[in-house]
Length: 291
Image 1: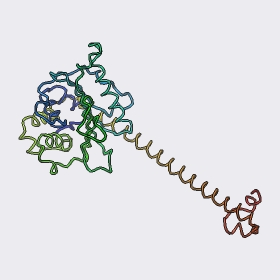
Image 2: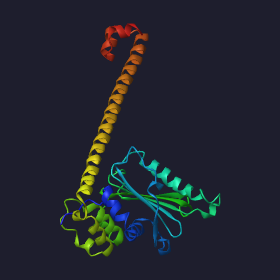
Image 3: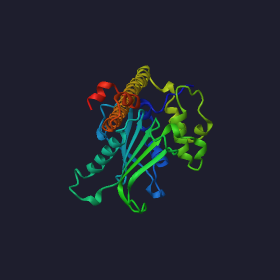
């Protein structure tokens, strides 16, 4: 048996875009619900254009949006390539989803319900932090128990996830193992995943035999696009780093010359011979004469 990677656009949407029970399980496992009554019981999928497409990153993002019976909204994304503006785009789209709740309800702010943005990132973007799970919301700077409810942003760095460290959160571990361990190289899924009915169902949905030749061609095209975009991003980052290094080197050289010019100026005012100033600073006789 051969599986496809569940992080691809085709597989992600087939698993979580067609099966409400699976997206409910994913949301309840990965979102920071403190009480069981906060958990999602049922969902209604929203239209595909509810979350605006990003034309610059369209090949890097898989996403879906839905809401529960209490009108809480959920936006789920898989980001294949990290960019510095990704957090800002997520904040913008989440805020826009929050504001859109009042488009047909005048300005009755009591009707506003929270919006949760769940972002699964296939790269490490916080290398100086050990944890893989990052939760952002509006809290008081001194009293973190004081919260303005409304926007909930969750970012998960998939490459950092290590299942043996988080056994107390069973479903979270199982879903993250599903997203990080299943790929084209998988010939037999781990028994722990097969034993769970929800994850087992998701595994069935990414069996290669369940897809047509045209779908498999689209799947391969998705990964080709990811490789191209990653190459472009890496090249741009290399040019940026190279430019920064050259700029810093030039700045250091110019700073060193300015320092030597100042020393030479002071020595010249003290009446030191030009030859001695040249030896002390490394400047040319012409440069010293111009002081």
